[in-house]
View 1 (cartoon, rainbow, N blue to C red):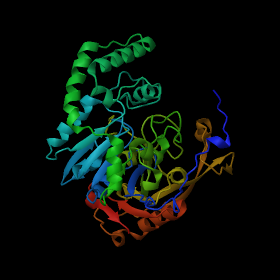
View 2: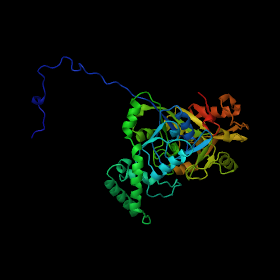
View 3: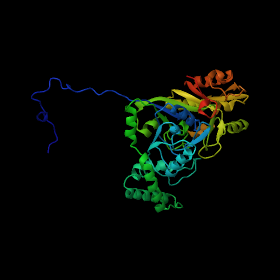
View 4: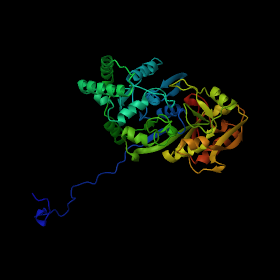
Length: 437
């Protein structure tokens, strides 16, 4: 058999059409609806849930795209606090979807039931990547929720997905048992009651079935159907991103803007506004470098006044001055179109307020955020110092209600990072978000 081509093989038309494109219409270049993305710009706990809740009141669909129940978002609506770990914070308002998320099924149902007791029905569609967590280690100060092992099983191609759970349960059981054996081979002390777990998973699967949709088709229809306002809620934050964060003290997913595309299966062309959320100071949970950390009375004051305790872990957060080096770095990766600056009111009692504007090594400024954590531990922070405004801002609802010194502080932050600040938070509830434009 010959695979060579000759002129005889060329197909000829005895009566070729005069216009080959006659009757054909050029495909319409319809990019569809744009997606608004809300992302953490520091090490998490910036108040993303509050911003999402605010935007969700004007949205038709709210999406989670990565992470698991290592996220902790608190929303205050009509005087009631709602805590979210797996469900999107915006679920209080429109329909919601989770895709690309690692999910702990007992935690999912418990979370929905706890919040429904407070008077809000939880309506969510789910198309998640993995369904369970087997084991967790805490060598780097994690939330101990097993998020890392679940993402590891995904990357190793042995993870369990919702489509597996809702498919042939016999096949799912085999995969589950193989996964258990895999972990037991690595951790000899791990014991799992396999049959009991499978029984529970089968029950959870049936409860879950009515809520499951194919995520790619669901999002495609949302993007290309009637006009729709779509909001994506990022979990964790830029400095915890598996690729761009302060590795290895990071989470296991991409919590920068690219995670919205890979987690939800949406094209970059559909990304519209990208809002970064930052506190007016800086906090971090767990271990790892923290250049502007204040291990003194200032740090204690920020922790106490800000009630800086993790929603997920209950751990006290480490506190320090606002670090504009990390905010500029987060902007480089995410391309923020605007910033929400939260918890300005926590600074109300300070005589002076510092802002980190640059890092130095051996007395010389370095032009970038260090990728090497040993180097980051060694940096000296260059600060700008501002006089405190020494007045209560918690009742402010407009820009003009803020003291001039507070306005100066905000404008300096805005100009230094080169991104407009659209919201300023001065309290817990959505009414405490001052919208600038």
